Image (cartoon, rainbow, N blue to C red; front, side, top):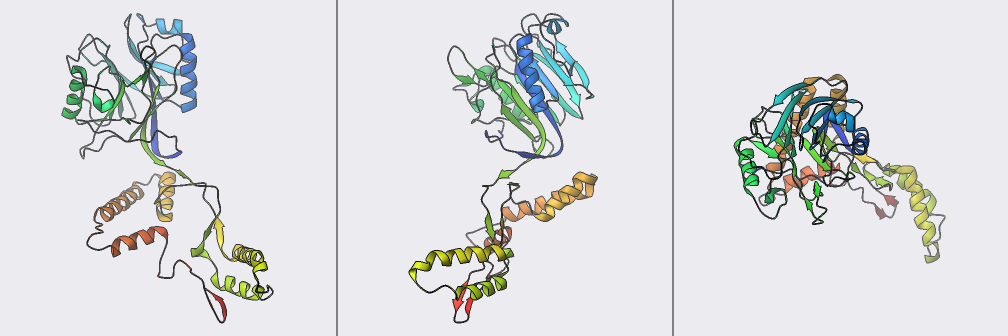
Length: 379
């Protein structure tokens, strides 16, 4: 059974590393001017590079242009059919290599184009058709997206049919990876049964290490007069940015404790020792701390990304030096080896030492605990 990506259904800000190819796949259920206007809005809002359409119901090449045009995008390849038809559009200015129909089955439609060494296959299988032949196998990197109309529990159906079993077997035999998150909304909303289904799927090939192509998939909002929802697929490395709470935090590791102690000793003598002055005492502590202890918050940050890694990444982005990229990958491999070798059962000292290092703690008294003696407040 193919593995599945567990992607968060929530929207998070991300940082792109290297080029990102954005693909929108939608079964448009007969192309029209009204639907094209909705699709154009989606393309502009998400900066889409490639558009994969299924079921345009165009018998001839000019039929889609008569019923609805998509400005800013060129028709890269299409397979005409009065009832079905698929079409692949590419954004203006992007070089592409179009291929002919790449599947011999008369009841299944598939066409492929290549962009920046990435092969993108547009697939459509009608509901009542059967998989009599396999999809063509393309070398890494390759992405298959479209309306497969196959039932399998892997992509959240209640049962498996022959088409779903055939598709899973094809994925296992060809080292193909399913990009799917069961928490996402279904790509098809049945108007009759009022339920979500997932006929629209996305597959990617894997490299020699069986690592799938870096891909994220997201279901967009409904399209008018269509039961299918658009699917946004992004190919490329994306690092999630964590949004922090907008509350200032004290950085005790950067505190000037001698100054804090001196200021407290100089001011606390003017406050009489009685319960009525408790608020004055706490106000004095906060006022003195603001002068001696750094505070603030980061609006967004990358978890476990050190200053050294941040500098290396910025330099790599600016210069494109592959040696810096190799250093980043070596650092990542060292981190994976360190985490995988941690065993709390035998010795937790090494694990706690690493966790303290991630937290910025360097010594026994790194917490900056304060104690009071006869000479006043000391750090």
